[in-house]
Length: 473
Image (cartoon, rainbow, N blue to C red; front, side, top):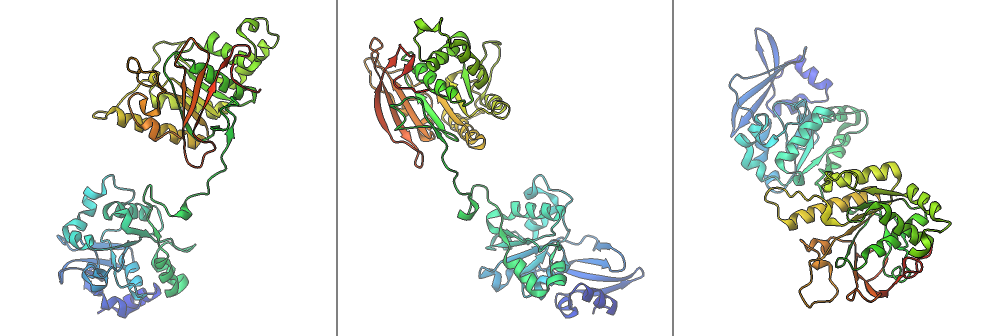
């Protein structure tokens, strides 16, 4: 039986006394007073009791009693076995409200919410009762609705439960403004409000899994000219993408990059160049400046615009180099940290890493080279998207076999097929005869949705203007 005062107290919380009695709630009296008592059952037997004083917030449980879910026997009901959802609340009062509103497959945790998240909830003593008492029954449940309190401890409890039960099986309740649990929802909005809050529970986020509505509309592609007229119909410099540029050593890839960088600087686009194999002064600076000015190496020394070109390079070009400190070693994380500073401080929009093999490569223990390259490329692509920059990596192919003079592919790049698989654009420069001023630029990959198409063009380095083909400032 429930004492009249307890009935009144429950009534003020919106809980009918017959609901409470049906769930085994009763009044227990001792020399300390009257306790509202909640029985915890397993396999039809009471294994614990939680007692509460209503005049003051005092709780206690049976000494030596087992912890288990309150009303946990519903886990074996036909409704749950047929695929019905199980609601988990933070306390017995919220569970009774849910049952009273027709949500009979409702249980409550026995020990409330933790003050903060548990480091390893699956192995935490706090949640051991889930495995000791309910592991098999919980494993049969199709879906859980987490109706914990809408505060920080409640959020910690819900997060722990989702980690234990599996986020793919969980939804969480979002309470109407001004309420933080099912009891408050009932008092403010009645049965309909409780039912709606439970029925509208949202899927627990699963990293990497989204509905179409969760994904923002794709931003318009931001593309710039490469500065090489013959190349522009096939590819662009696109913000948020990774371009892998390859070709055998000492064939003239730097002349392509100088043309590209000069085009950016001439248009006021800030760039960051990792110049590990090329001395920043004078070689890189003068190569970019000559391409900007459109003059030959012979005319450059006396060119009237040389100082102006240097000023623009000073304004728009940032260099990552170890020429000032030969002991400096940058791994991929350190390099991206430097690039981040260049983006945020100097507004850099285009980043060129030339070449990849000059970065200090630190593989994790038991990590293969292919796995490392794949992981590193994912970091670079995530950086490009996050900071909306065009990222170009110069990656050398393996040396051709003796007698072989054909154009390499991205699959020939040293260490990993990921260079081909993960690139947004793939560009190959090939000059089979170093004595002849004629080369091939081949666009070998254009990811779907990006401007351009695969194709090949023949190009020359015009010594009169220090550019590849038709750069226009």
